Image (cartoon, rainbow, N blue to C red; front, side, top):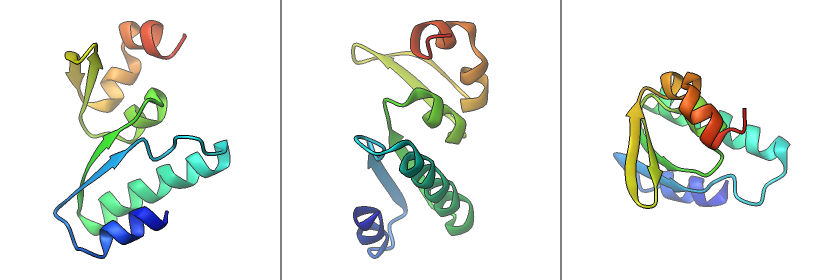
Length: 94
């Protein structure tokens, strides 16, 4: 959270977050998700989120890209990808 706050002090037009949930307890992951959503909606700031927690990332994203071995294999609105049978089987273990 300190890193996010420090980045916001520069008043960027785009905020890049690389694995903000890495190593955090589940309660803190939800807090980070809430903060990212608040920053985007209330601050009008564009956010590029790189995240292995696919469920959280897709839930938060207006638009998402799924990368596999460095290549884009799927793209679209986050909610559409979250509902995709391919994404559910390959990345969400459903």
